[in-house]
Image 1 (cartoon, rainbow, N blue to C red):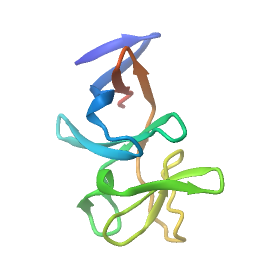
Image 2: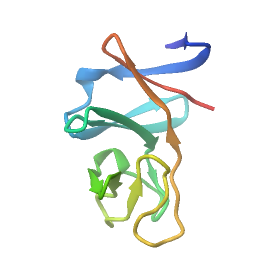
Image 3: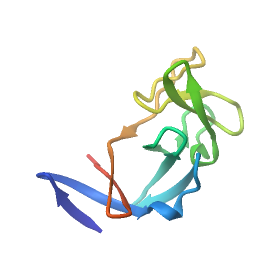
Length: 115
């Protein structure tokens, strides 16, 4: 479902209860797989591409979320490459990057802004 919130086009991904606390889930939007993360210990939500650029596997939604200092991150469940949930930059020292999306939660629904 697409909706306009505050003059910006947002796409509804799921209900908040569909994503585990301090974990992630994958939602398909068109041909894209989006990883959505409920960082409930910090009261924040994040969204990224689901594709890990290291080995081109659709697995990031099953990754482990945490922080490095103040920076929220997700670690690929297979090879432990870590990515910033703010910028998408690889925090493991390699030259990989993932796409991140703005997230908004309203009335129990999770929305992202797509390009």
